[in-house]
Amino acid sequence: MYKLNIVILAAGLGKRMNSALPKVLHHLGGKPLLAHVLDTARALSPDGICVVYGHGGEAVPQAIADATLTWARQMPQLGTGHAVMQALPHLDNAGKNGMTLVLYGDVPLTSVETLKKLIATAGEKTLGLLTVELTDPSGYGRIVRNSETGKISAIVEEKDASPSQREVRETNTGIMAIPDRYLREWLNKLENNNVQKEYYLTDIVAMAVKDGVKVEATQPHHAWETVGVNSKAQLAELERIYQKESASKLLEQGVTLIDPGRIDVRGQLICGRDVEIDINCIFEGRVQLDDGVKVGAHSILKNVKVAAGSVVAPFSLMETSEIGRNCRIGPYARIRPGTRLADEVHIGNFVEVKNSAIAAGSKANHLSYIGDAIVGKNVNVGAGTITCNYDGANKYQTIIEDNVFVGSDTQLIAPVTVTQGSTIGAGSTITKDTPPEKLTLSRARQISIEGWQRPVKKSKGNK
Image (cartoon, rainbow, N blue to C red):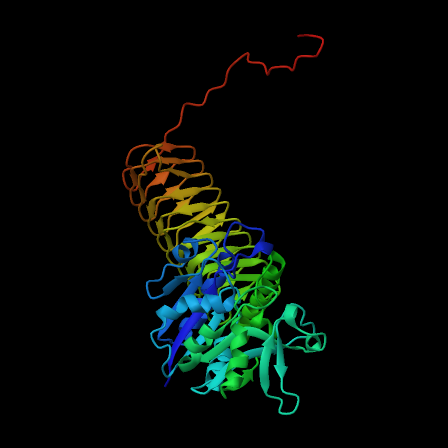
């Protein structure tokens, strides 16, 4: 087994992004472009990963907090060859029997399988290149092959290519696996006598041919695996490709997608059997949907676990929470961080729950706010109920014990406990703990005013 180093080039400015954010930190599928490349790199189990950064300064390493990575700064940016030179001091295997794989921080969708095939092609005396056939190769370096043997002899950048070379459709992706025993020597020989006055990493291909090192090309299964992001338009195109692939994987697993073209997975979505997802749903972070879960249209779930049989009705927003079995959520419900719902809990339309635990069989079906609360079993929370948990400076807890009935339009002023079996009369403001199994209410006496007349709107002429 060869020792494997991976160098990821992530120093580019990305002028066409028209953004102050470094290009490799723009998000695709819910995480930075560079994070996608790093995930792929780690899946190859390398001996080391070095990321070359530049534009954006320390913003890039700060955004990707990983102590296992080595960082090398390229300043100024003088080309891809110059970028790999900056990584060279961090590659302890350079000059020995290993291999260095060069990847790009703005090329997020290269598959692990494609890279494994490339690494398998390369070797101690073989330089591996990832090339791709494009209908329109404009802007890409061309692969130059020997007219007699068909072997690769060089890579020519488009700006330096002859008219006949520009007709070639086999293009360079920039991704290559380089034998370490030649890496330092070839990098030291690079020159910048080209239109861009840069040190091209691609020039080592001609050096390999000259030194008798085989140059072997492999191609990806999909051309989009090698597409880089240079503009917001390209980022949007890759986002659609990413989402289409995510949807295809879900369909293969047996998930029912009402419209595979209208789902966004911005993280990890784990689904059991017979899961159904309606249109325009967004899944962020790590979301787990167990067997038989149904998610209604236009819902957003972020870092949520939903147990088997639960239904999320349309237009619901759920974040950092756990939902038990056979629950009913929404429509238009908001489940905020720290919420834990036990089995068969109903949270209805325009109900908001925050940092609360609700036990089995309880329900709040309409227009209520439950915050910083512990709710027992078989509790009914009437419409318009509010746990008043914040005094402007501190948060306080409300405890509602088992089998409580809370009438509509009730305010529970925390800290307060509604004890087991209590009934709260509608329209009450509860400021003290209630006794168990009793009706508690607090209302002003209803009166009618004799002789009262409704005000009449004054006419413009009668001021």
